[in-house]
Amino acid sequence: MNRKEFIRQSAGAGMLLFSALGNKAWASGPVTELMKKLVEGNDRFIEDFLARGAEGPKQGGRNYGYNFAKLAAAYCHPESRYHHDERLVNAMKEISVHFLNALSPDGTMTAGNIESPPDTAFIMEPLCSGVHILNQSRQKSLDAVKASIKVPIEKVGGALAVGGVHTPNHRWEICAALAWINRLYPDKKYTNRIDEWLSEGIYMDEDGHYPERSMNYADVENRAFITLGHLLDRPALYEPVTKSLTMAWYYTEPNGELITFDSRRQDQYSSREIMVQYLHYRFLAIEKQNTLFSAITSFIETLPDFGKNVVDQCLYNFMADPVLARELPRPGALPVNFEKFFKTSSLVRIRREETALTLFGGNDLPLIIASGRSVSPNFFGYRKGVAALKYMRMSSRFFSMGYFRSEGISQENGKYVLYNKLQAPYYQPLKPGDRRKDGDYELTPSVDDRFWSKMSFDKRPADFKTLESRVVVSENNGEVTMDFEVTGAEGVAVTVQLCFDEGGELNGIQEGGSGAHFLPEGYGEFRRGKDRITFGPGVKKHEWTRGLEGEKYSVLNGNLNTPGHHVYLTGYTPFKHTLKIR
Image (cartoon, rainbow, N blue to C red; front, side, top):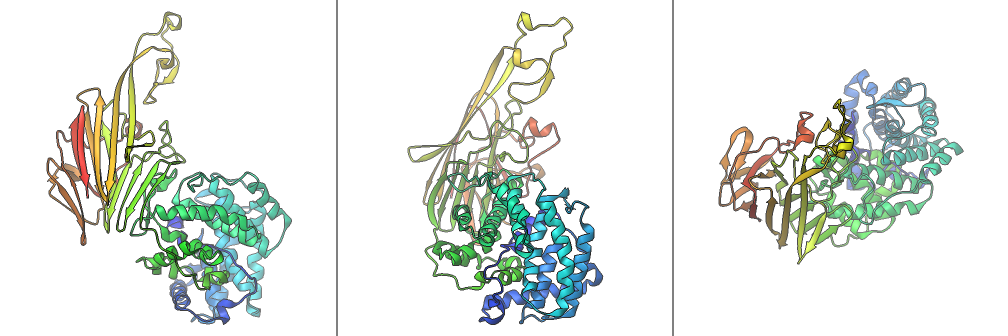
């Protein structure tokens, strides 16, 4: 399983923890409708797994952990069709052997990254969850499995007790894996390493973001801190999780998608669903009697893919942690009418029942295209029911400096203001003292960081051309007015790009080449199902729609193209235009 597939299945990985060791509440308590569905979903997996024959146990990477946990759950759950089925014992033995053989001499696996401690840690959480489930059974036929799986787990434990990381979330994933291993096979070296990482401190900004501002990796961190808090009896570690999950609700669209515009990781160009956090919400709703989280948990259970992503994946989570199988507290009111300004990442979320909008102006500046930096040019998004304007971008043909990226968001007279000022230099001759007869000057970047040349740019006087862009946004009961103003250098082509969800259809627009659409005047409409978004008036003064990303991307033959229905509004500076969306 590659990294992308792992992220997709992160809801299936879920919260891997347990409370009340030895408690067989899942075996002896009342079988709820949800538990029945979990057992049935897991049984469907087992049926498919067994149909693969010898290939099933050979599935590598993170599947070693997931498959082992699901097999253990089916074998031990009394309501499973595969309860005490010896075929599952044999499969778990085979997985133990394949997993041990897949480990490098240092105890790590190559799973995306070479001999990677954090990638190996991701395997350990479901794997250890499965071992814990087996440990609650006294079936003699399991003795050989328990002995064989202990060998690779302890080998991995030795590696994680000394291994390093790449990113902030890796620290906590390794800690969670060590906590699990320590619970199964106690050793002080595991908790010492956990304490060493934790002593670095847990960063969370005042709004509830972890350092990467990523909904993908907030799932990893939340799961890790709940695991650590639970297994090590450190409930204070639930506090950042509670703050993160509370914030996440306000990033949630009416259909359950999470806004990712402000992420510093790869998900800034994709969408996630709040469903990936389901087990975290459920655990804290029950453990802390949190009525908001109870309401969010119930909301997630209504989403169309809940069966596929949770019911079919998570039986072992409920068996490893009996807390999850308890009744939710009475849910509180679910906030669906709000206006929130998250100042630490300059992101605004406004929701009016089934209508929601997003404003973003918090890129990491200066613009450096690299993993770990917020660089998305998406500054606006809008949803009405199932109809979605996925994002809006704006670019200008100003020295190929690319998309508009606001320098934060400010508020003026009840409106939100996005603003950016670009400056491009023309260089003058070097001062006499800096000139060389051989013409051999330093290879330096231009002062606007667009290109490099042997020109000693940093020593040269320069004259600057300027372009200022300003977007003022107001909202009234879900209807949006956007006032665009781009001034400075005259005659510069400006393109406003609207990307609508590929699942709907456009009306009232003008077809262009290569999938581009224009709105020369009047209003256009995007419709999906019974929901529609109206936008306009339009303007069209040119047809520049290629190379909007700018030189930082074009020099690498890169682009930021995405699927969807793309509509362009175009003009020249001085550019002033008012766009209404409803």
